[in-house]
Amino acid sequence: MRIIIGMSGATGVIYGIRFLEILKSLPDVETHLVMSATARMNIAIETDMTVKDVEGLADVVHSDKDLAATISSGSFKTEGMIVAPCAMKTLSGIVHSYSDTLVVRAADVILKERRQLVLMPRETPLHVGHTKLMYEAAQLGAVISPPMPAFYNNPKTIDDLVNHNVGRILDLFDIDPGVVKRWAGAPKANEKE
Image (tube, rainbow, N blue to C red):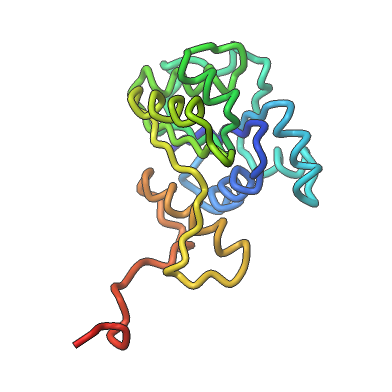
């Protein structure tokens, strides 16, 4: 199974990194990584990792400028793509098929081939233009999954919050690395008689 991880310039590069960390441990998954210039910059701002560290987590790394990369063609078979984080500029490029970068071109290919495209937009507050872009991306077939925390699983750390979001998105690809604390119903003590 091949999955493309795209990282663009919004805050939240930890999501793309966590996908790579989890998928690296799964022998049947081949990851293809493509990062925008701003995503590369945000790695240094938001983490203790280097770009080289992050690239080392992927099976294959592509330059965002390489519009002739394997992942730029529908004939290159993948299960789909996750863009985490997805900047509003990247979202706009995807919605308008403005494929001037490999992140956007690969996402466009995933849509045209009717494969799974999951976008993690990371912006708040949202104005109507942002929400319109998300709506239009969903109309094209993308899954819109902003990293919103769940609290029913009683998270104790930021990693718990990140892992839950990442795990729920991997559910969409039928991958269960065991990082999601599944809902088991309301505790009996909270039920009214």
